Picture 1: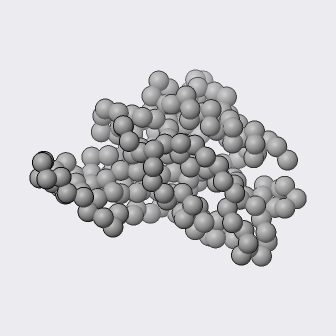
Picture 2: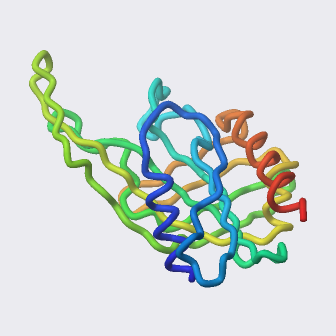
Length: 200
């Protein structure tokens, strides 16, 4: 069942667009268990670009929570889909690529850490090659992603405490200090927690 949830997440969360946090219930009509999965999209951690500067489009790193429950309301899986929406071009290369995402670590004000290893890692390249006739370069979209599980208690702490975050990949890592993290990011986590984790 876990592999089925991951596949559904990959399909449901692969769309493009400007950052907007949404939560949807995935189709379970072909599931024998009829477990209910709610998945989110659009929860970008920061507008800070990995290579410096700020994003003005959909690109960036997203941490989108998901939860699978039985029809009786018992939690089966709680976790995050982590996605780095970026690109590669022949002029600058892949300056915002993390590579295979391997680890996410959160640090809190009391210097305690929560560290998660990433599973289901994959990198997808866009089918469309874009040409810039003015700057004379070609490029394509890149999506690096994976998933990790989290406990209810750990999730709740992410919603209530100022934090910083380090995301590690095989090509490079990025650190988001507390001032870099979007206020909407933790607000969205609080919404998801209240609606789908705390509520029975």
